[in-house]
Image 1: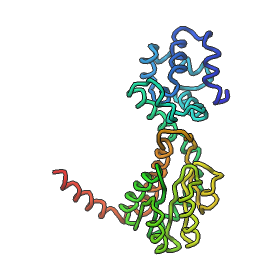
Image 2 (image 1 turned 90 degrees about the horizontal axis):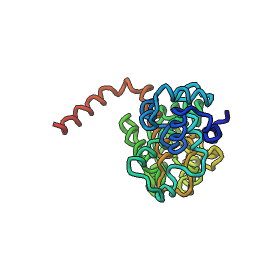
Image 3 (image 1 turned 45 degrees about the vertical axis):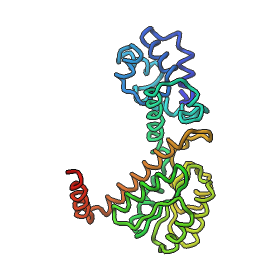
Length: 284
């Protein structure tokens, strides 16, 4: 069964489902964006059906289990024009709890799709370059800048001289003082943001290692970067905020942080312990 036909298949076969499974089908059709964040028990309660009925419902659709249904549904939703974080969200009469579930669902979709978007060889190469660096700079504008701040904080904790900026004039002198083994990480969901590309060009001019984090494998940033780390492409132009892309960027930053720590962490344990003890003093 093609992944993009799941909801259509449920609607087409609605009349053939037993009574209990019909309740489940109706709930899935009415709230498809909520189901990927639910447990079997939660869906059973919401649809007024049993958990065993959910298992039978999934198998009737040709899916082995409820997690398989959730993943298939999440993938289908990301291909639709009406994304959860589109501006049209503001025109609905959803309650705050429903909107919380929708945002949670969107973020979960981004994380579920992360491993398929990421190239393992590229990620490994990015880690190797970062381990060798002394300075690491993070550059992004708009929603991407918040992810840069997280990156700067994490790698500062690992002992790197790091900077996060969305200001071209602040980033240029920092890159000028970098050596060839240092790393500039540029973040842009589209991969075509002018300010980001200008910084990428200057990093290349200075022969500094350039890593791009973007959702587009065909973007200008991907072409310029020595290493390109791809995130799921599930944003739309008319949106109320960079919700899924920010989650995806932060996920990549976390993975890079843990990977680099795994390589050099044994030399940092004493410093981590001293830092923890000092911060705990403020909690007393």
